[in-house]
Length: 208
Image (cartoon, rainbow, N blue to C red):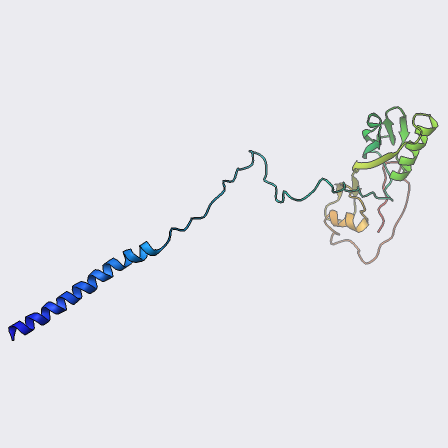
């Protein structure tokens, strides 16, 4: 009887020992069966030089894009305080940036003093071209005039903040009132009238 129990205990112990050894060696066998796969490769990124920004899209061809055409206010009349840029194509020495003086004139290279106040930009361009031809300086001149800085305008009356403000191309009377903070509580905004009168070369009429 004791031999039979001993034999059973010995068999059970051998079986447990066999299972335990198998569970311990199984992970090693599984690990040996997995092939060595190549890891991901990384390419070093060279940072841009200090003070420069990396391009967002290096493949875009921006060299072929045309330069933007400046927007010209056809109704704007030049006056004292305007800073203009005159371009004479193929004749860089004859152009530049100029200020319309208090008398409404501009001093241009080779042409001398020219009236600018009261003229539109197109009319002033035409007067420059005409003088180049009349003085026999250039045969077929090409001239372009742009306003670099507009002269300021003044608004007074029943607005919240009357005073001096920079003019913006295409501005009208309502834009000017808005720039001055809008009407005051005493203003009558139910109707309006427009009065035109001559105030010399410095004046500007803003219409609605």
